[in-house]
Length: 88
Image 1 (spheres, helix red, strand yellow):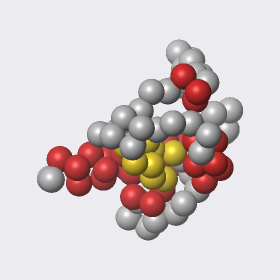
Image 2 (tube, rainbow, N blue to C red):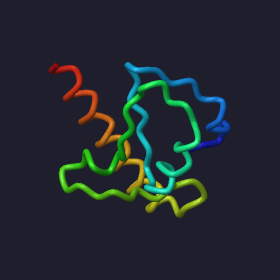
Image 3 (tube, rainbow, N blue to C red):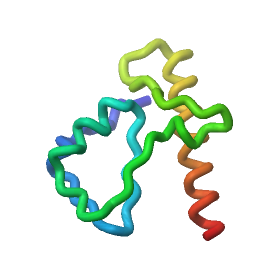
C-alpha cells in the first residue's frame, strides 16, 4: 500500500562519500549523472538478487500481484546489501 508515499525530486537529494544510492531501473542511473553525488557509490538493486537482474519495474500502479513481485525483489536486494555491508 503506497497511500502515504510522497515522491521527491531527485535534485533535492544530498549524497556523500559514505552513501550508497540504490536505483531500481537502469534509466535512473542516467538521471543521476547531472547531480553531484559527492563521492557516493551507485548500484542497481536487482544486481544484488540471488539471480541478478538489472531491471526491477517500478511497481506503483501495477496489479497487486505484480506489485508484490517487485516489492519482494526490492526487499530481497535491500536485505542482501544490508547483510553484506554489516559483515564488513
